[in-house]
Amino acid sequence: MAGIYIHIPFCRQACLYCNFHFSTSLRFKNDLITALLKEIALCTAYHNNNHIETIYFGGGTPSLLSAQTLGTILDALRHKFVISDTAEITLEANPDDISAPQLTAWKSIGINRLSIGVQSFFEEDLKWMNRAHTAEQSVNSIVQAQHAGFNNLTIDLIYGSPGLSDEKWQRNVQQVIDFNIPHVSCYALTVEPKTALHSMIAKNKMQDTDPEQQARQFMQLISWLENAGYEHYEISNFSIPGKRSRHNTSYWQGKPYYGFGPSAHSFNGTDTRSWNIANNALYIQSISQNNIPVEKELLTSVQRLNEYIMTSLRTMEGIDLSHIQTSFGETHAQRILLAAQPYTNEKIILTNNTLKLTNAGKLFADGIAADLFEEREQATGDSELHP
Image (cartoon, rainbow, N blue to C red; front, side, top):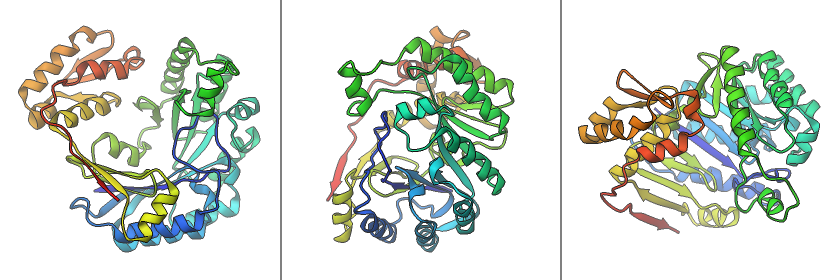
C-alpha cells in the first residue's frame, strides 16, 4: 500500500534555521488550496497502487488551515484514492494553533495523529529560534491533545543549539518521558545555506554550532530514552513499541508515495522519483493551465542500491545483505560486507546477515553509508521537465 504527502507551504513566521519551502505571506493561500485540489484531481496513476495506508500533512504549518479546508482536501483524496479504514492520518501542528475546539474539529475530519513542533520547553530557546509559540504553549498543547484523545502523538525537539546546556536538554527529554509521549523526533541543529542562521553566523552575529556538544547530547538522548523503554528505530526517531511513524517508516522501506503541493516529492516504489516546483506562484499558474509542474528522475540500479544502503543503515533493522543479494546480486552483497569490515564490532554489528549500527556508529551514519556505497554508475539518470 502507498502513502500520500501534502505540502502546505505557509508559516506565521520564519524560524531561524529552516530551509524548507514555505512563505510567511498568506496572500495566495486560497489560490494554492484550489490548485492543490486540482492537482489531486489531475493525478494519474503514478504506480499501480491506489490503496493508501498513510496520509501526512506537512509544511510549512498545515495547522494554519481551517479544519474545514483540511477536510475538503481529505475528501478530495478519498474521492481519488482508496483510503484504508485504518489509515494513519497525521497533521503537523504548531503549539500556538492547538486548542480544544481545533482538536475536536481535527478528529471529526479523520485526523488521528498529531506531530507537534515543540522544539523546546524553554522560553529563551524558542525566542532564539524565532518560534511563534511560547514555552507554556509547548506544555499546554500536549496536555490538550492528550485530553482530546490524541493518543498517537509525536513531538519534535532540537538539540545542539548554542545555549542549550546538558541540564536543559535533559529536562526537555524528561518532559517526553513524564508526559508518556509515544513518539519523538530529535534533530541536531543544522546550519543550512540560505537560512537566517547561516547568514548571522557568517557575519559573526551568532555563535556557530559545536560538533562535540551535538555528539554528546545525541548520545545522552539515546541513553535517556532507551532507559525509559523507547525504541531508537531510526537515527532521529524514537517510539514506544508499536507507535512508530507508519508514514515515515514507509519512506525508509522504499514504499511508493504520492506528493501533492509545491516542492512535494513522489516515488513509484521502484525506479522513478518526481518533485513539484518549489514556487507557489508558478505552481498555481501551471496547474490553472492543467499542467502539473513536476520534474522526474529515473533512478539507476546503482542509485537504488545506494539509497537502500543509506536509508536502511539509519534504521534499527539495518542493512539486510540477503535483500541486497536477491535484489542487486551476490557481488554487491559481498562488496558491502567487505567495505564494512573496518567498522565491525566498534561501529557496526553483523548479526544474521544484517549490518546494524552500534550507538557509537550512529554518530557516523552518513559517513559509514558513503563508504558502503557502490561508486560505479552503470547509467546516467534521465531527467525530464514538464512545464
